Structures are given as C-alpha cells and as structure tokens.
Image (cartoon, rainbow, N blue to C red; front, top):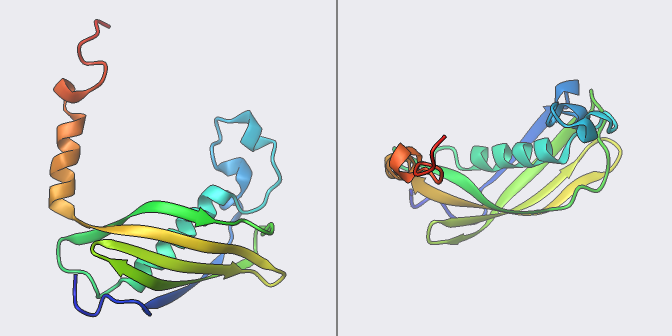
Length: 148
C-alpha cells in the first residue's frame, strides 16, 4: 500500500442502468427474480458500489496488491429504472491496517438510492491465489472422500 492510501480518497461513478442489470436478470434460473419488476437489482447495486470504491484506490496500491470486498452495509431506498443514471460517491473514511472502510452515497435523478458503508481488504494477489488453489484441489474438496 502506498503512503497515499489514506482517508479522504474518493471516487464518483455515473452508471447508466441497462435492462440487463435489473432484478429479472440477477439470477435468471430463479422464477422468483424473473417475476420481479425491471429495476436495478440490489445485487448489481452492490457491484457498482464496489467498482466505485476500487476506482478510488487506483494508483494507491502496490504492484501485486488488490482489494476484495469483505463487508457491505448498504440501504437500497429507491427503485432505479433502466436508462436512468445512477451516481455513486465513495469516500475512503478509515484505514485500519489492511482494512479499508468507505462511506457510500448513491442517487439517481429522482431520489437517494443507496447509502451506507463498504469495507474492502487489501490482499497480496499471488498469496491469495496460492491459498485459493489449496482450497480447490481435489484433496481439499468437501466431497473428495465420498464415492460418486
């Protein structure tokens, strides 16, 4: 992490909501989601918030470092229809070791859509992939000892 990684870093993302980011598209295999209104899905909203936070960190991480989302505490206060512009503001409000906390506010032209906090952890990418590989090898798979 660069010394410049400190509270006050911020980013803004203006996102035009496509129909493919509405609730019926979230998990197409779910009849429950398919029957829902065509408005921005909360699951996609979380992804857009994460993207905004990652943008705030551009240029402030070392080579070989990334961040992963580890906690989300967000409201979803208003529906955003396709074609609307969602504007997300993310500000780094706390740095605690490798834990980064962002304050979030998002709105469209009609209302506040989202507010809350999001926490990300700075990781060493190669170390993370090494640990992930150890979890995905057959000897570590939960069903590896069961006959199929």
